[in-house]
Each structure stands twice: as C-alpha cells, then as structure tokens.
Length: 207
Image 1 (cartoon, rainbow, N blue to C red):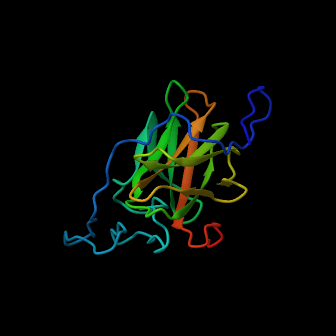
Image 2 (cartoon, rainbow, N blue to C red):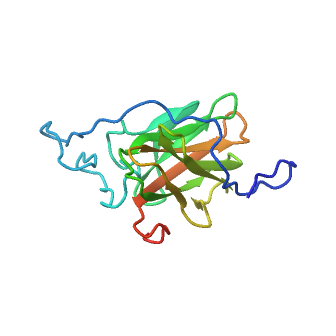
Image 3 (cartoon, rainbow, N blue to C red):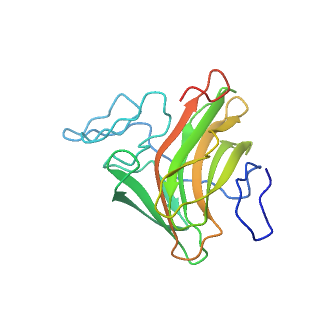
C-alpha cells in the first residue's frame, strides 16, 4: 500500500526500500564468553547472563540482553540499552538527531541467503510517529520494508499484519534496519525482540 502523503493519518507502507543504507559496521564471526576469554562455538553472544537467541532466529543479541553489543549499529541518533524490554529485561532506546532521524541496524544477519525466503519482525514503541523496518540484500539492494504508526508507551509488533518477507538472489547477504520516520528532534524509538528466520514454506508461518 503506498504511503499517505496528504498529511492525514500515517498508514502502513509495504513498498520498496528507499535510499537509506544500513551502516557499514561488521560483526565478528566469533563471540567471547564471560570468564575465561575463549571463543564460543555457537553464533550467540553468551556473557553468562544472556537469554540465548532461539536457534531459528538469525539475529545476534536480538533482545539486547547480552553485555557485549557489537553486533548492533546505531546511526543518526543516540542509542542506549535500557531496562524494561518487551520480553526479558532490556531493550534498545534510540533518540533522534536534529533532523529527527535515528537508525538501529545489524549487518550480515544472514551471510548467504542461497536464494531462500526469510522473514522479519520486531516489537517497538516511542514518540516517533512512525517506525520503519527494512530487510536488505547485498550487493543487489533487493529487499522489502514496512512502516507502521507507533504508540507512545505501548509495544506494537512491526509489521502488525505479519512478518516482512524477502527472497534475495543466491550468494547475497541480508541486513536488518529499523528507523524513525516523520519524527522531530529528540523523539524516541524503543525496539526489542528482533526476529529474522528462514521460511522453508516461503509463507513466514513458522513463528
């Protein structure tokens, strides 16, 4: 559905990606456990007090419960991990810059899509009027996005009507990005419980 440019009520926008780019930061392939510094064999940051991501979820530190937070990039605004998550005890709290922009992203969530279908969703609230979730393939730039109105103090699932779905060409990687839209300077965006998973059915009906 196209966006509403008439200045009335914001509507969900499931159209193509705009020109926004996910940050270029990279995450390490291995992650360090607490205590004795050794590499974990799994793809999950585990400092000992972290709620581990389910194996099907490709997002690292998806609920911001882990002490190490290098997988996430915050740009155009200020991001802080705070108490009070949608589930668990933590969430990411972003504040927009002077242009009303804040972005929270993770690069290379999937290193090689192998031409398969993936699905994504997140929980959010804040004073930004609209939140936008994007999944982007590299290097083709193929992807999908959805924008949803936010409630100031109530968590909503984005997209509300069901997960984003993206099928990218073989040999490409997927990045994940959530950002503010139509926000004033100092507006907030709080996000938690990111999910991105492989959908064997292609219908995103697994979770």
